[in-house]
Amino acid sequence: MELRVLNYFLMVAREENITKAAQILHISQPTLSRQIANLEQELDTKLFVWQSHKITLTEDGMLLRRRASEMQQLSDKIFEEMSSDDEVLTGEIQIGSGELKSMDKLAEVIVEFHRQHPQVTFNIQSGNSEDIKLKIEQGLLDLGLLIEPVDTEKYSFVRMQQLETWGILVQDNSPLAKKNYVTAEDLQNETLIFTQSRPMTNELNSWFGNVANNIKLISKYNLLYNSAILAKKGLGILLCLQLESHYEGLSFVPLKPALHYNSVLAWKADQITSKTVTSFINFAKKYLKDISLH
Image (cartoon, rainbow, N blue to C red; front, side):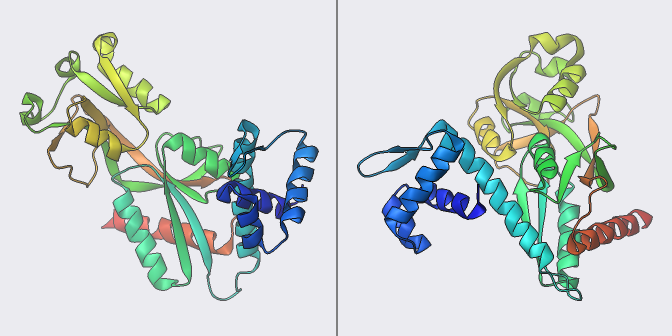
């Protein structure tokens, strides 16, 4: 299976039209059709449903699109790392991040590093911890901003200097919005919107203690923004981490007992990284250490 043929496949999947894809790839339509047919034969599966005016992916085709996209990203990354200049840092650093308060500090690190190395670019991908860890394992991300604990056998990391605080986002007109904090008992009869992260769900269930079986779960989320809109419209009370962002019409109230976590900038342990990524890691370590000394 050649990467070139996978790129042909991705173009057909994107355009949903064999003629348009062939024009973009600057090859003839019969040649492209033959390459796709050979790929299907090699994989012993149908990748497309062929219709009169449109081509759609089968389930196997959708799986191959995802895997082929990952392979394409890795190929681009290898080429970028191998062709980088020995003197000047270049290339793109791939960083995954959850919606965390410590992103504010990581942004400072990125800005200062880019000021010193202007030819380096960054690709910041938002996601939950499980998604980010998986992409680090697959080599699709260089680093990830994660909530502790992290597996020290799998990851090396530098600890960020901000605590992440759990609480609720609730409508401003709710009686709970006037409180300095909320307890498990305050929430046991309320409708709640929960994170879909399994580790954090377990932590929150532990925090709820004896009333955990009485909570009313109406929705789950992996990223905060859309769930905040649901909370604003009155679907329920959102359990989330405190961010620097302000959501109009919603108030953040911390939990009591307080639920705090450290966050870390993590990368795959015992993995040889590019010179650019290694330089960024060393820079981040020093930058964050210097902050902690002041």
